[in-house]
Image 1 (cartoon, one colour):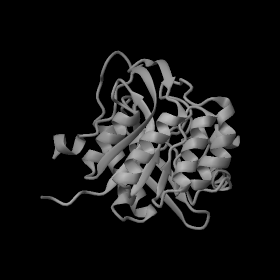
Image 2: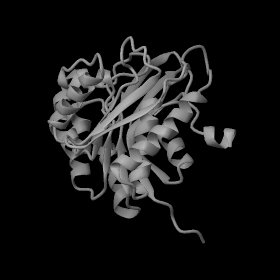
Image 3: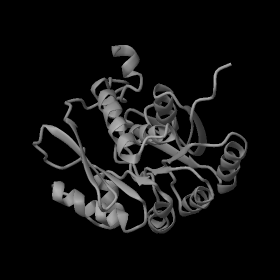
Length: 269
């Protein structure tokens, strides 16, 4: 009988199209050799064109799922995604604060198609309750603007964004620069910092529009690395390499934006 692999729990919404959310998280975890478990916070009707509907689960259902997994199976890392209301943010923050495992917070605000996934009244709860329990927070530039008001136009702006995110309490901030407006750079640069150490993660900027699920995938890959015992910088480098390959192999699906390919290593290896 084989030993159990490291265990990672995702607390996020379901994407019925399979490209992002819980589905992307579990695919990433399988690809990276950890055992993925899930707490579903919301169900969405979603495809390559956008989000057609979303239904949030009650806080007691989210709490029961979390306790069921953590109290029996245990976790080596937790990743959070779509938490659409202040009640859910606060419920999950309380659960995370009592869990002895690294936490990756992906502060999901909008979908790839621009659909709002976080109520405006929940922003303060993310700032004051969720970010302080994060080992790493992984906002993109739109989410940085939502949470801090900092609008990033260049790499110096990413440093200011990181400072603003770190001021809310996470130990590390990973600022994702893939959405840098008008960037002519051949590189996609992300900034990882704890306020003292600075790590720039640079990979070639890929010409592929099929990028649905990149944020979920990166955060889940980072959590998987932490569960394996990697340091935060080591896990971030590994996650960036994995998601870059997944973006490069992203494929058309439906009439809109297709997903990244979570199984790219199997198909190219």
